[in-house]
Amino acid sequence: MKISIATCLALCSHSAHGFSPSQSFATNHALSGVYMAKLNLNGDPVRSVESFKFFERESSFQRKKSSSSLTASVVTEASPPSSQLFEGPFKGIARDYKRRMPLYESDIQDGFNSQCLAATMFLFFACLAPAVGFGALYSAATNGSIGTIEMITSTALSGMAYALFSAQPLTIIGGTGPVLAFVATLYKFSASAGLPFLPVYAWTGLWTAAILFLSAITSASNLVKYLTRFTDEIFSCLISTIFIVEAVSGVSKTFTMPDAKLVTALLTLVCAATTYLGSSVLKSIRSKAYFNKITRDSIANFGPTIAVICSALIARSAKLAHGVTLPSLSIPTQFATTTGRPWLVDLTAIPVWARWASFIPALMATVLLYLDQNITVRLVNNPRFEMKKGREKHNMIDGMHADMLVISVITALTSLTGLPWLVAATVRSVSHVRALSTFDSEGKSEKIYEQRITPFAIHAFIGACIAFAAPRSLMAQIPLPALSGLFMYLGVSSLPGIQMWERTKEIFKEPELSKKVKVQPWSGLRRRKVNLFTAIQIAALGAMFWVKGSPIGVLFPVLIAALAPVRFMLEKFGIMSEEEMKVLDNDD
Image 1: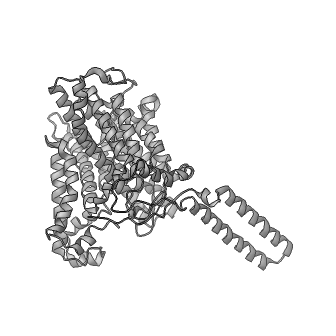
Image 2: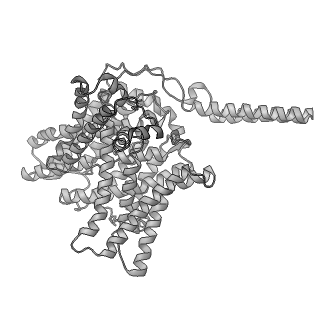
């Protein structure tokens, strides 16, 4: 399928118009002086009031002009034609940075407000907990070669670097299950071949970084244009499902373990439910009639943080009153590698043939990181979020080439130091965008605070947890069940707005009644064909979920790549008509 991309009318610095915020202030100040002088000289109250109102209108116009100039200027270089998959060296990267870097000052200024503070606190917990959890899983999968300290260090440093240098800083990078499955398989291969794991890991990572770097400078992310809503929805629903399943299994284990105590299991359930239900209820206040809009928005924005704190207080009270203890976040107290090895990996510790042979697993790792990164950035760039900075309207590839360059450099550095590879994390990224969004009365996104402060601060705070004792001891008071509830909230809250999820719910609804509640874009299509399309997506999701946890989990990226041909075959073999696909698989 070919998706046409319009000729670029993009964004650049407000300085291109020769108009700055300071000039806006000076203009308003001058207008104020003129009209206040008019009021004093004329002494006519009616004319004075009219003059003052005119000043207010002029001031408002100048403020809007100044604000819009920060995000709306013309970029002379156009996007490539839709048929062009590769470009000259660094051409795509240069275009991405030309669009976004002139807005760097506003990326800083726009991050200082209460909503960004709330998003930082929420995503701090949402990013720290997976880092600790993945660290424990990496330690088990690699026999301690990569552990919790390496995972948290990689999350903090890589996240800050990505926030500073990427073209789409709202994307959150972190550990993912498919990458963990690949690393576990690589460890088993190294052990069976009698090779030390970390040098094999480092060489595989360096080859992967080189291929990703080559794809970045040749604009190979243009290939993502062949992925459509069909793939995006399956992938995002899959990641949400994983979060929900992991949250439920984490709580249910406390009831099914042989040595489980009922009081501990019940307290676990209460803490998890407090976080999930508290976050959901506080978020829903935004659409209620209570208080005023500012208060409602503040409560909704800080809802997840408030819920986590309440859950921690419940666990603390139970411990003091009844001696019931729940497991909590465990962060290493010493900044050193898990095994005490040097931070730099010895690249000469494996023979030359093994260094070249590492290119083969690097091909699979490249496919995995490339797809994970670009599919998530596609979801972040979705037109429904109405982002404007450095963006061409409805172009979901904006920023991908520069971001891939940053990922390639980070992959090379983490490989040399034996740290986990990080890539765009879907649920955390989408949750980050939602947390920075303001909504109208119908729940549609009105504005997003596009800036670099929140992603940088989130990962800086994570780094502080291993660098300083005070935040580390504070995090030790957060019970793990509270974070299970937060995972549940992340998974569930990411589903609304995904058409696959809305169509899945419609399968169980009476057609006529569901149309009366809300008319969907696909309401004019035959119900049977809509359900067939949805069933195919659900089957693909189920297959990917099974493969992810199976012994062949390393083939997970192959299944992701296969979704594009599957979508093509639906239309090719007449399972779905072209008109039906235009409605069900429309990216707009």
